[in-house]
Length: 130
Image (cartoon, rainbow, N blue to C red):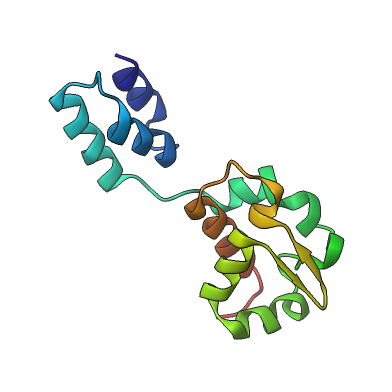
């Protein structure tokens, strides 16, 4: 089935696609669904660096519209002081502040919440802060 083909092709790379198949593919056999749940349980989360490079770097690498640049403590310290829950909320829902604007999901509407969080975690984690 398509389910088995995609599950095999993912080989730990795309959590969201496998999750969707596990939850929605009515043609999947019980064994395929159980294999899918096993894969999801052991799968790594989204790759924040890859998501950043693909969807976020255009603005964040240059600081366009006030976007905090990875590795820039001055950009990130006030945001980190608010906590990662606030950073995640702003990244997912969008935010307009004194320093600029963050469109919802950075304008990449197809990103899942977990993918947006992973990219934000990647950027915030590259500030040299412990």
